[in-house]
Image (cartoon, rainbow, N blue to C red; front, side, top):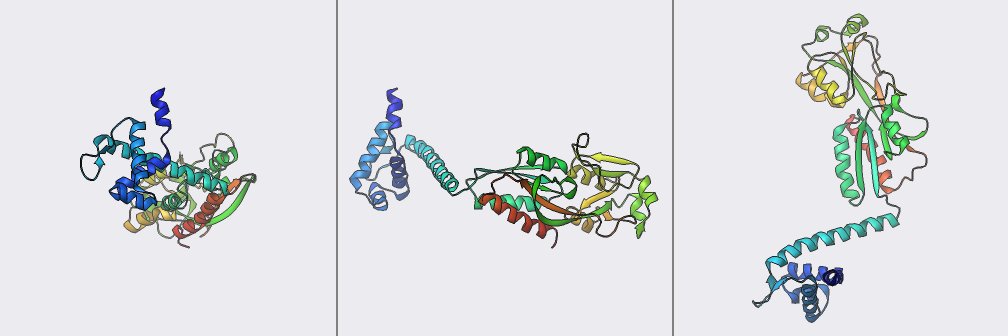
Length: 308
């Protein structure tokens, strides 16, 4: 109990003075930086040693240096001060309406590159705000926003809910593709429905389709393989297991390298499968500075990746 009481008397002022002495190289230099007399710094360091109960300074030389224990204390001290500074930024931001956390649930069609850049920029703009990212398909995005599991969502038209506020983002063009070794790749021009209907179509399916989810989208084939995520669909198409739609931003590299080729179903118009993504949030959500920033950046980054 006595040991804990001694440690409890350690102040942030003492810890900041300790770091200043180390960084400036001497008690006198730290005193100048902190605009104090040297005797005040010396007394503060002596008290700190007594309160911690370990020798921090080796005073056998003209200029005091850190002991081994002092080096360990320095590392812990810097961590403490960093946490205190973070707490100060957090509470200062909260006082001005800054949120403590943003949780973002994005549709699988949203460009991953844009999402990563959004997160990188967010960490610089709002270092004290926690960010949670989740990826879902269609109606599952809106469901997470409505339940409060996510404060913001990015969803395709099929998954929109009338209960949510909506902000339009950029369109995502969907392209029908197959592997170059797939039989459909040998058909030129607009492909009639019959060969498409008899070939396996890989379909991205809403995970909640057994409940109130969205029905399978853009289906022309009588033979469908349903998958629950875009990455699996992409790899299955690259492997030649079927044909299907993928976002243009996802297949640009594949089309350029020849890993996938574009096909043109005659049943579809040129822009029929362009998805207009939207940001959604609950009507009662308090849209603070971090949420407003994300809403703005989502539109900018999504448009850039879509080539607009």
